Image 1: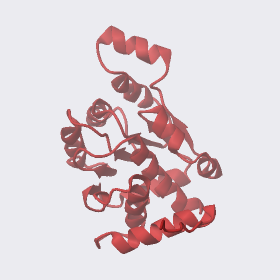
Image 2: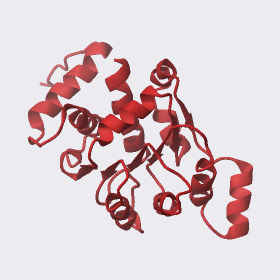
Image 3: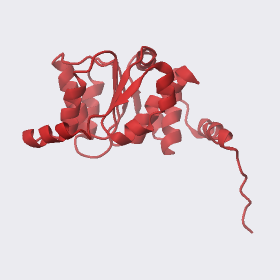
Image 4: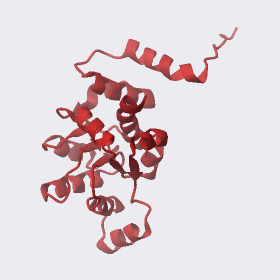
Length: 210
């Protein structure tokens, strides 16, 4: 006989999910703000590895929240990450999200120079004024170029979320970021993705607007 599934109201699904995550995840030495990020990543992916692979530079969460409170622009390396960031929360804080990847002139310049669109996108984003958060969830080349731009003093991000996913230059790009003295949240190893980049952004936003 099949087990009857219990229907849960939409507003209770997330809270119940978070309860399950708290029950099943291993304890860690996080600040409350960091814990909220860890739980949001697990909630998004159903992957408890994020309880062990997330790296937070000192005060990264607080720096990110302060930047959002100042109306930061969040730059993503994919349209998917941009789409996943809560627009209502952004609006409440006067923040916005930008992604240069789909722009025709970015694609044209990348072809002419023989480089990835992600590299050109980071160079375009470096010219933005005001407070900027970078959320990289797909392209390690974006993260590598961003690190170079920081060393060149061409950009000074309020926070970098470095969670590209994959196999080629992914681990290396993340470790390079971790070794730099910049505010960052990094998913060490091969895991990550646009959904995780958006989840981290949302975890910071929800600490301010919920």
